[in-house]
Length: 288
Image 1 (cartoon, rainbow, N blue to C red):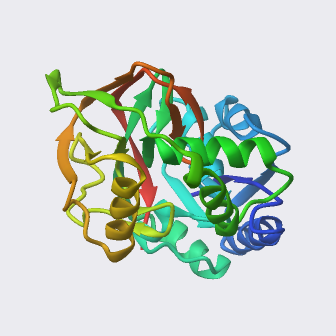
Image 2 (cartoon, rainbow, N blue to C red):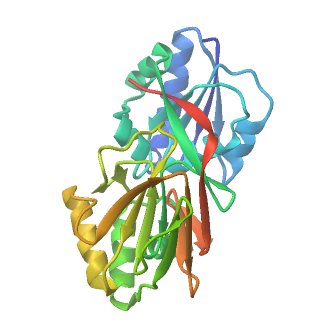
Image 3 (tube, helix red, strand yellow):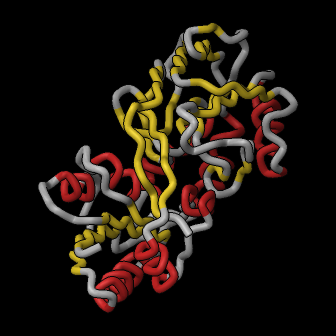
């Protein structure tokens, strides 16, 4: 390993992103790796930098899940491993893979060069590597984005949920899984390649990052009570179960009679209909 590009969100974690990135660069350079630091300035900036022609041996994302998503979206079709240094709010993939927050330990992981494959999906043409949610969580993410002023925390999600839930009326969703229509009556859908959803809820531990399929959680029931029941099961690590069933699939289509909010990896993803498909490309992520 001779050259590294470090892409960092300097405001992630209320400023932890900048300090962590500088420590990673210094650590790599102490081991003879020429490291270039790029600090993102807005949405899309990280993807644009990674997409520029370069000859790095590794690209490192320092920040939250949004920073990593930009690195994945911008990375040219070269077999370049990706390092992840969690410094954001949820850091879902880092939790799943037990990636260290400490910059010195993160440098050790990067230099060791051990990788795992990571499947991704395309949601209405956009990249997804964690979770696409249709329903209440989509509304929560949209509400946070509208009010956002700087970094966000888990409390922002909790506050948005408390505001929305009393007046939320879930729509009935029509779902096709690998071309097969699911029984009607879904009020929420998660299409996931993670275990720790939003860093709080626990999904199926049988998930595999590289099996060519995402897990599809179909939440049935009626009204807000069904959503609360599903959320409680998620907090207790008991999904699937109750009114929630699990399928595994390469393609998913979700529609409704009215527009329903969608979130993709914690960012607003517009509204239904949703067309999801597992992408052919796999990435290599550096792991302990």
